[in-house]
Image (cartoon, rainbow, N blue to C red; front, side, top):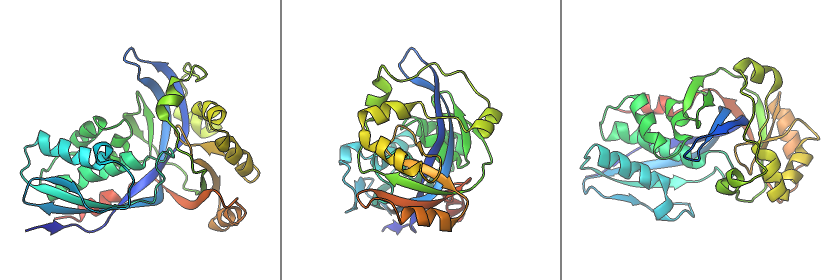
Length: 283
């Protein structure tokens, strides 16, 4: 006997700014960043099985099973709570891999949140977020499901209500190594801490952007092109670039002019992860 779930939307995010204020003795960087969700989604389906095995069905993904964060999330949850049920999952990928849009973290959070319901674990949001942190620093923001001002290594979250513009997102079809960015001697690691008011006034910056542009000239090319139409920034450690627009029509007109060798998206900002409502409707 199996239970097949509906299709769950696993959203992308943007880092609207990213400052590094220091570094811990264990090597982790201390951050200040702002997360906002966008309506670009991977689609996940979960099939609950009785055999206790965690498997990936045929899916549109190039990720090796050993590195599959969805499998890792399911196995972590199963192990922690001695779950006897198993899982087969499918994913339809739309969020670029290695683009700084948080697709993997979102997929992990979606897995934890949905399996919490389907496996009837009844864990609270804070407990799920703590588990998510074992999988990645960005996972808790997707679990908690609110746009957030983040500090620490990215796990200390304060909900923030942000404007919801349209964004043009450009993926220059390169995969950035986050480790390479954070290991660079050129990376600024001593930003003065700022306040939410400072961010709302000035917009902040992404200190990873100059390093990424130096290592990956295609990112600089995308920023230079998009800057013609609106202030362009890089999200996370790259490679995606974004700029905000007041209307769908403005964003679509810019997209129509973009070089065809890039992947481009017009997306709407969101302050809530729609997965929260999907999970509420699960029995």
